[in-house]
Length: 613
Image (cartoon, rainbow, N blue to C red; front, top):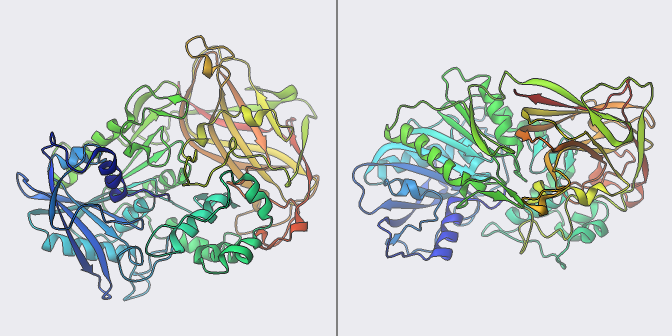
């Protein structure tokens, strides 16, 4: 849900490459209008129209809470920067519309993050669906030289706005592409993953959006590396006591709703977006550090009711919104050997060209998914592919792993989890999420050797592969574990371990690439709406969805299962003593616990891997 938007990217392109390029023939005109909504609120809207279009043009809309304006005088012409993410569409004369959502920047009204659609059950009510309808209606009636067709897109929060804007859509809205949008904010996106609270992101983002409606606000941290700052913060109750003082509505909702109650269920996109009413292209990244789950979740949910073949998905090797960058050819130290961003931009243009301009045959692959490891694009008639066969990778004694199920009557390993010394989720320093020098974008491909040697992290590694192994689909961990406490967090990672010596690129020798990883808060073992204390010492099976991948584990590589019980500060510290509301825990509630991971015949810890031959 980070700071992505067409306007922001256009600003960056202009700053980086100049607003006027002599060699550019793509000239645009900027106009500004306050579009009235049905309740009288007016929304600030920037219209970018081609100066010399060959004919009537389609409209591509992006609505945003991050500021729609661009640094070009109103009612003036400018050269579209070549690094604008939609430059290939600009060359063909698309009309671009950027709009501030109600309650942010220059629009009227009030805003609170990610509100549900209510217009169908509350007659006369307004929401992001009705605002989109009203905006489209005004645009097709008033923008000169438009062809009567509009599309909507966006990344992150603008992606969610594209998703909900396509619900009960205006007749002129012909296609949508939600990209990196959030799906369910308790189960797997942005603020919680499987009930575990995403502390650093949740605190910093809610402050950013809600502290000041006229701009984005950076929390005033007193230091650069925030690992110790968050540790010294102590209990989450100190956030309001010391800093927010009840002024951030979304934080107050976190505190008031610590489990999956009616508030979270009503706010879940699953509750109000049920099927693709217009053609929908979902776009996501395997390494999305904010909304990895949303596109996968929403595609899967909408596919169940896609009776008109309107639902499609693209997954790539990207961090949050990386496909809007110039190249997308690498992430951290991991190279993808091609310009994946440009490849996607051509596919995106083909998508909107068909629905908005009538160009092409409209034959789109159901799923287009980059395959990491082999570094090639693959297409599928169903997603995940039905031909995949699940193979279980089992934890075993001596830190080993293999495809043979355990037969021993006993097998376990123990470690101490101490909330006073939590495992960092990435190598220090841990900068502010969107602060200067932040490594937030890359951490999901960080070499996991920084955690491997800690005594509170356990690993199980198989022998070197004798041939390539292609794994495509959902990774499901079955963790058998117990704790001496009455609550616990479990983090499971599936890791591609590179060969000990790589003569082609010695810096990648022994690299531990996390292919899939996720957290689960133990109190929700029996349901996210049924928090309960764990029984100390009792082995329990925790089933954890590590999400979808498309990865080739290469010959000579090894596969590792890694388990730990803290992931700080991206995940808040579990007190490990059950309390009704962790947001109100006392500092004294945080205790050490001995955690046990089992790998016996009765308690076979393993990871399901869908293998494709």
